[in-house]
Image (cartoon, rainbow, N blue to C red; front, side, top):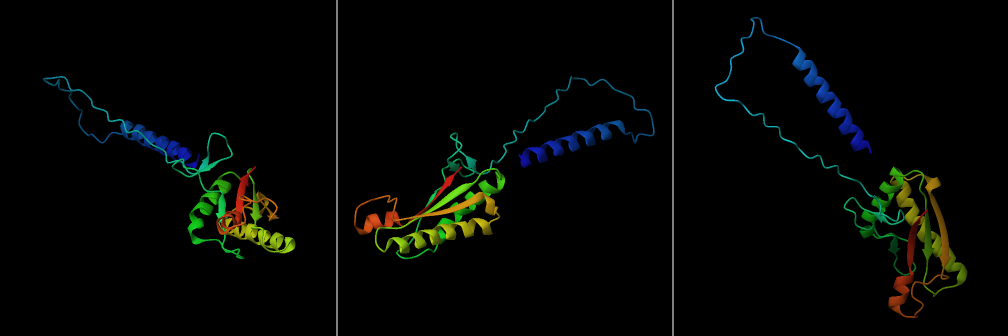
Length: 179
């Protein structure tokens, strides 16, 4: 929206300058018009202005997309017994922050999850730490605290109920959901 307003103001300024320049005269002698031998054709180039759109939402108004229209990851995975966000996730989190800053009326829920190892209490605390780790990055990128809600499900909502290394890795996550 800001790009559209800027382009609009730029066009008004350019047109105003052309009108003023067309009205001013610096000639000191009268100009005698001569008829050209052939009729000149004015060539006007039309430049298409392509606005670069920023990240936003897909048609369902729930799926976050980047500036190219590609879906942005909403699930962030963690190592065993850790709540440290991977540097590989920073770009997606930056896009989420940009979307939330551009849409201050939107909010998210960050749900922290764990695998089924550990006690219930420990997993709830670890899930909360994972949600807070994602939240901290978004806050550092300018998202308002009122736009973020953190919740921990611990081991209650498993992505994969199997009891093996692959399933455990899929369950150690934080998921961002837009409201």
